Image (cartoon, rainbow, N blue to C red; front, side, top):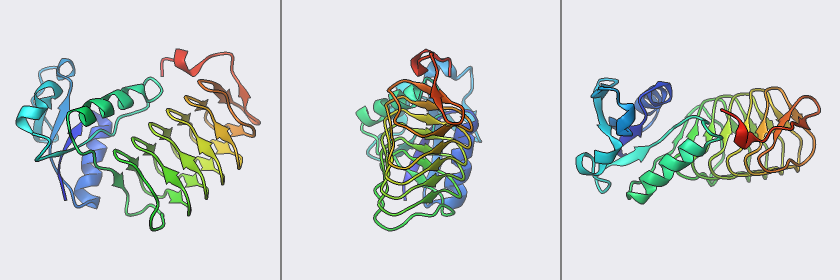
Length: 220
């Protein structure tokens, strides 16, 4: 059990607080955001809201853990940056894995992962750090999900797939078996990917085809 400070003061932080409180051994004690985003707030969910710049003094890393369940903004770049800041400051970053998710013993899962209910994670899967799996996804056997990835809901990742860092997969996307998604791939809602993808590409449709737009250029 850890005493945990959650990064954020919006919906994702509120959800993380709910899940940790009702479905984990951890105790949430405070929230933190960068000072410029506090907008005069001092509390969130009835708990202290502390500027990130002062976090080490009020909640030192040798006594408290952290959790940063952020969204996919900037193709997961914001979450990656905050993850790095907290790691650099010496915080242990917990992961939340729902008791209602299906996984098997000895499945490697990194830190700062947010894995919600009804995910099916088959044997021999490896999941990196700072990964969000929203509810109801299928992660096929022998697949690898690298760091800073975001799955929305009801994504089907077939067996022996490799998902590169900072990918985003939209609702009801389907990935055929034995494919590699390049770093920063964005797979649109309902897309069916039948071949490997290029880094920082956008795929949509059935079968999915690459867009002329780079995922780096999206306000997403």
